[in-house]
Image 1 (cartoon, rainbow, N blue to C red):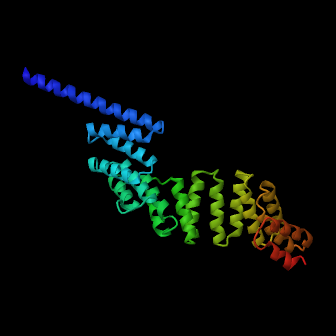
Image 2: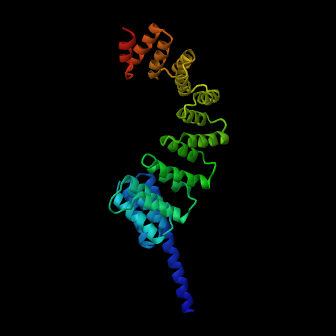
Length: 303
């Protein structure tokens, strides 16, 4: 009977502690909502004292510390979570983010935490995406490999297709970029951006007429995008189709009058057609808006 009483008392004490611990977590969360971060930290600390393995309390305390810009304290709490639960992906993501923006000697490089997430969950697309954000302007080839891993998991991931295509463009792998942009168009035939991107890649291969066809399709999908008219006009200039190029430049200006740099392109097309007076007005308009080289063109053609 005594043994049963002791066991019952132990259960009641444990339940009471769990109740108090949960109360501290709940009040701490409410204090975060009220921007009382110091008070929240105090409550979460109470919860941790009652249960040193309380993952939620550590996580919420780390969040409160982040609001107070206590980066060191936040890192310590996140590391404690991993010590308690080594496969806690959320904590690894938080550490990766912290390392990216507030790297110091007490924290590993972001890649270390992201690679750990991938070890735990090899199909974690978010971790691969985070890696691409860090590599995108540093190592184009490695970024392509990471995007390829995402596409091995999800072959129809449009963001990865765009990302890989864009990286291939930077390496002047225009044929490879066209394959990725074509896949995007197959997945989403109404993707005007997919057609625009593919036109850029075709321009890189000097396939101007095919690029114009893609831009015409993009314009059909979104007739109000001035950038497609401007780009198509530039390609027509390369094909010496100056009058048609002028029409595209004019339409681009109508859609977006703030794009004053287009006046310079339209002026150059007009010069090719001996429309000197009108061209000089365009150069002047571009010059008034600070477009580089506009006044040099006035000097060359208008005096």
